[in-house]
Image 1 (cartoon, helix red, strand yellow):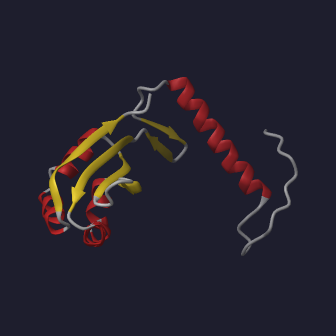
Image 2 (cartoon, rainbow, N blue to C red):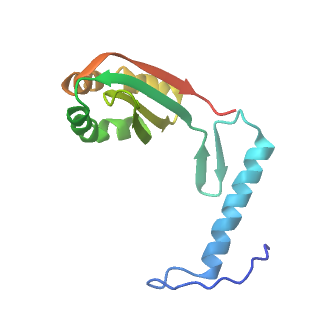
Length: 143
């Protein structure tokens, strides 16, 4: 049992309790310990009914004709990104050119992001959004 300091909790609709917080802290600690024991090369670890996967980080850079037009198409294409398992964590533009866009996100695997990038619906969306040339895609794994 983990001894935690007493917390002053606000009860919201009866769902928050000290025991509830202790449970989540135990899950987080046990998951961290399992990752340390199992090493870096494991693709997924199961803790009870929860499964934790190691994601790959994806950095996509390209230039577009007009950022505001591109953004509308990007926001509308959320369904295709979700289907591929790609989660965007940030959209950036170059400090010297607002039409040079960089998207940073996570994908469940290299195969998933390659399949997403080969999707004809993505090519169509990129043309509709005014993307100039081919995007520069970097797929990174955490060490």
